[in-house]
Image (tube, rainbow, N blue to C red; front, side, top):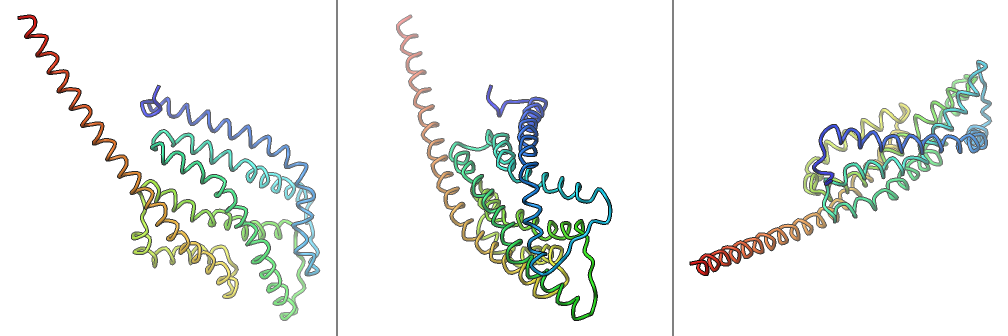
Length: 274
């Protein structure tokens, strides 16, 4: 059966099967995460240790909660390619063959950009923010007692959103490739997009100008890169549309010729019968 001819119930059943596959891979990734989480938690604390930050747990279950959060994060990262592939498989029947092949290749880039976003925020932004906060505490003569739960909550809040924001070029390329977006539109709405990114930066970054700029400037650069990428994707879309229209015209001409031949054949048969 053609996937395009599926009913709503069959589409829901198809989605349920794909979500089940994602859930199975997520559970398997969690099992693997239990072996990686312990050394990763110690490594994530290293940034704080570089600034003589001692992390404290203020209740019995906090270490376990942190451990499980890291396991969940590992499982999400490892299973994200499977999630993107299943999502692509679900929507791919609505795409043409050229678009289907092109968008499938975006999955590895999306995963790498997610890792790049996490790396940028952890290795560049997070140490700067920690250093600034600790220096400010010293200047104000404030003795900080930092809980490990608060430390990791702040770490995740600052780093994980960057993994998603770094998906911007891939998302724009995808929508440009299927003709929903084009570079001219992105240029026209640039100031509104900048404002939206500026708001996102304000939510992510601490209320301090330098940190805010460290978040905003890379996001603005990503948007400009996305415009360049959009030009490439949109040109490919226009080319595929041209090929599609040409194929439709050739198919229509072929159909008309076949109909004319069929009518001629029927007329010859009628003459022979007379």
